[in-house]
Image (cartoon, one colour):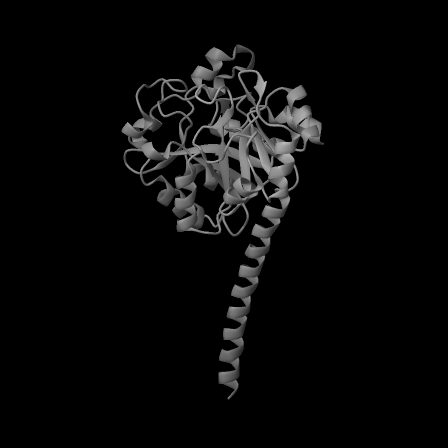
Length: 310
């Protein structure tokens, strides 16, 4: 009888521990979503105004400053590895050339992704940047673990078949979803919906880009038609995005002209969508957007933004 009671006690303890862990993770995710209503400092490709974008040096600097999110672009190599890299081609930020998806990880690791920064930014140049290697997402996640939050874009999904599956697998492996450590963003609605199908708990951000259309006599339109332009957008349009996403990422200016205003931000918020604006690097624009009520800014200069929000 005593043995049976002991086994029962152990079993209940195990189930209790699992339930406590599940509750803690659920609470963490809820806290993350609640915090999106507050202002978020999003380090665009790391501290990319001070160090080579998408390199460990840039992410370490941004993390040291205490940003809310490390922003990055995920792409997939020819041998199926997820790497942190923005452009479809490698020539701008490495000593290689051609399309990133044509290379294996080993081939990409042989590239120098730091020296270009020194050449283009002599005032910020550092010999330590020379020879910087392209990062895998695995390396970034292992380096910062749960001490950081990640804002990950599925980059050019049409050029990266299998990206969503590989990305979700990594996020699950590192327990970043229920622990409230990740947002996944994309301009491509289909990519976000695929991520949602793979794991419905991953918080998604719909990226949009507004510009004046020549075909519509200069009226603003959205690049992928995921919403109407800001002049025509309705509560129903915002709610359609809110059905699968927890926020909206948008441009503020197109060729010197503002494309969104405080009313757009307020209407999005009223429909459950925090608004994050990309990519704002000047302090006066940061201040203006904060006054307009944005919920976060992507920036290459997180240090400038942190000075304004502290």
